Length: 125
Image (cartoon, rainbow, N blue to C red; front, side, top):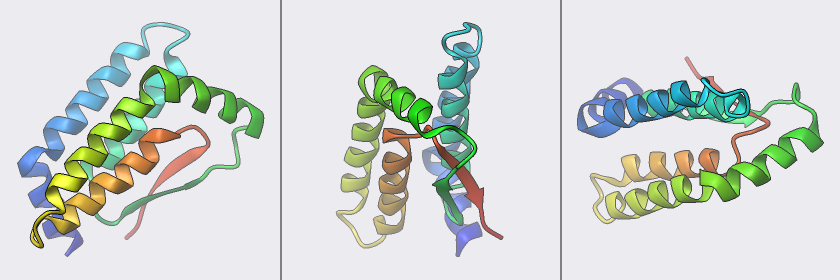
């Protein structure tokens, strides 16, 4: 089911969405201040590229206070809007039984997009 869900996801917008995240992340890497935020956009793009069978988990490598400060900045600069867009698409897709699995993936992306610092993407086999 994961492979079929990911293929359908890629065909119907997942690829374009991940390209948008990768492009935004790449452009953020051009500035020194934007480097941490660009890396987080790349992680969201990776999760958006292959969401079925992928999840995110707490990453203990980054100090807690630093990730908290960066998450607060992220929330006010763009994380809230990214999460709201994923919540809206998740709600629209969840209106039908057929769209429910893809809606749940948007809700997962919204949870990751609201506070990406201190988390990492884990792709399950």
